[in-house]
Image (cartoon, rainbow, N blue to C red; front, side, top):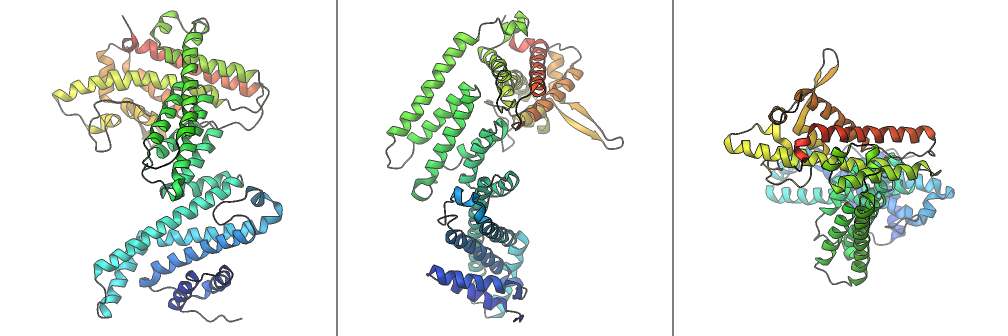
Length: 500
């Protein structure tokens, strides 16, 4: 066996030859030779380090694609689910994944800021020693082009590996590589994540990836308009999910977003059938909303849980959300199939979110607006009301749980005895005192603790076991806790909702 070390410059030349070979069989042979030589390559000079890592990353990715085509696991782009899951192909699958993981590691090195900076400096030094054939700006430009190519390579690779693991039902690796792909702007993985979390009835994560998809550059149509198909598929998945869990208003809003996106596309394609499909869903949502308001808002069921004066404070939407949660619970209790009780919580948590929006984004926001006219406020105290440029937002259209918590207080830690405590936001405390809320400090502490617990409840994932009595009881206990909390909010902050 020849263990003679190989000069990295010769390796780079061999890779260039491999990269430019047209015949797939010859390319495969040369790729196998290069892989066998990797361990014999001398450590690259600092000026060659970036290029070396980039090329090795590309080598392993190309070889993984060729291998997957040879064993018919993919056509180079799309995977065959049947062939991936076939036990006979286990060794092929392991080899392909091994190549892809090695490619990932080398891309990580090639994208390391220190390596990019160091290689750039050494290239410039080498260039000066050899008569300055290139300008520094030319070298910077070439490094920039290579870095962008590596980012795109890493995006495609991570997207590829994530989808591979998704088909293998390996959630941990699917999410790990998927998140990396999302970092590099993979709409494909964002779309898969939406479906994944919708299938798990995980509202919080599904909504996060919906926002990423919705805000994805609409001008980037992708090859053959592929991104258009991905976006529309994602819209449909998400609005069907919202409809399924009884959030009809939200489902209607998302369907309208999809329609708006589609009709404003600057591209020549037949839109009639797709728009007809979306319009049918919009009509279905509108019918369900009318039906909900006509039928569900009878107060009989609500009177079992709330006093009449509290029901009178509720908006129709919040009544519907609370009743929807109770109805889903009743359905779930009588259904002997695999269920996820987090579906019971989603509508009622939406009601709590609406109540907090009324308190903070309307009443408290107005209070802060009036103070800002008279004096300056520490931005840390109103962080939830600031935009990305740290400017005060004049009109709030939504509030996430994280922002809600920051507006009412913050959790601090005592490291001496390993305990934590809530420090109320000074302005929210002042707001509560001015509105004659009894024992305001303790109200804020209770509010913060309850909302923090609710934030965790929003992240519940699906139960994989069948629903037995213990899990149904647990579900009902959580539902009752939420009803008690809604009672507490309406009672304590009655001045926000009182119509008299």
